[in-house]
Length: 375
Image 1: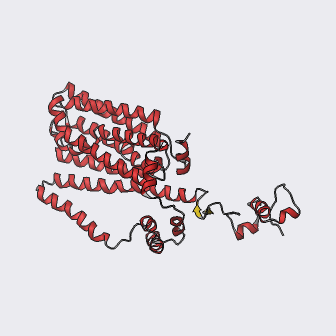
Image 2: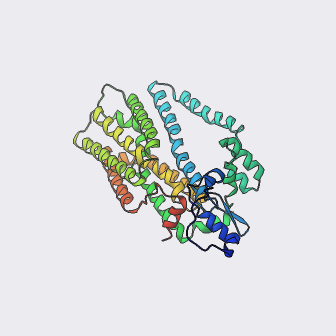
Image 3: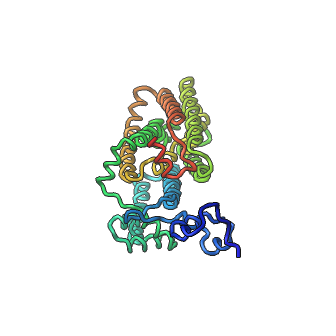
């Protein structure tokens, strides 16, 4: 009977010890029919948690890879829903509906969300942190319909708030936190949300064309939705850095071109404005818009990931508020052409930052990424 091929090593009485037997059995050839039938993952299991000092630790990367893949796609998959809502608002505006009808329609969505949430289980991770292990396993099985996912939750170490704060202010966390904050700064101050919020007003300043200003905004909404759906596929095959650099260069060219056209022509054509705006939105959505949110779950250290993500998200919304509220004042003070040239210049600086400081995370586990910042 073929049991596989043993590597060279001590064979004899000492081989009867558990460690020696385990060592030799671990080095059995993977082509062994016995191993394939009994345990294709060999001994010890390469992707199962191990107990150390009375606590379960995942010395392999099973848990990290499993949750990393889910976390990387979760924030990206939510973006089409956001852009669906923006497109619906643009369409309602192009349909000349009253503002109170639009507001009531938008208010019905969170109301529906409030009702549906009563039928959903609590977060398995939160339940596990509250020592509600049975409920956590039940919630995980309900969400994923897979019995083995509950084991992944069991391997996670619950981290208290004090240790999360200590990890947040540690020297190992400063660099990834700074990289993410600067990346988000360039994401917002390149004028992304200013262009989205004031798209109709921007088109109103151009010559009339085949499309009205509201219809032009709908074209931007459709283009943005198409690009974000493509990004969901592309980001799983291409690295973060190349996509971000392409996105930044495209944004810079679009904004500088639009600003230059407005500088040379007092009233630019609607076709030129629509082309530059659509290009800016498409390139922005392709990289700068989605990649920071994807990398938020990749770069931040595990111990403070939840706390740091909340703080960074809060700061990002402050950035959004500052850009959106300051845009009308910038227009009145500097003029439309100069404002777009400033947005294009910020996009160039942001692209330079990505080239020199943003690490590549595609194909790396969360453990490898975290260790890279400790060097």
